[in-house]
Length: 65
Image (cartoon, rainbow, N blue to C red; front, side, top):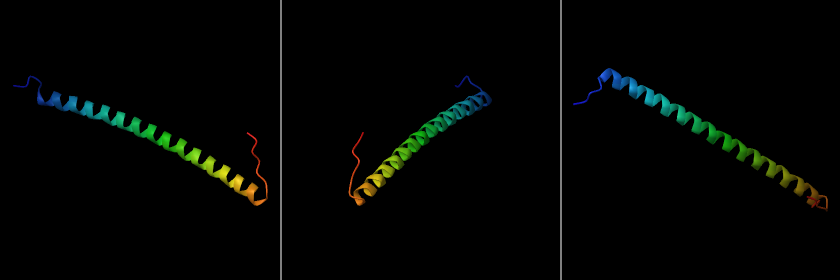
């Protein structure tokens, strides 16, 4: 026999579902942040490759750090 009334069980389940939804949204937000950082890094790398290609095409390469 379950001592918790069905109405209370429904409220508890709804709160648990809401909490899980908040957790899921937070994790998705973090995932999007990581994807944006990765995308930004890739764009930077492509930009650097373009610069090197331009330098090579003009007959020199700047290797200063």
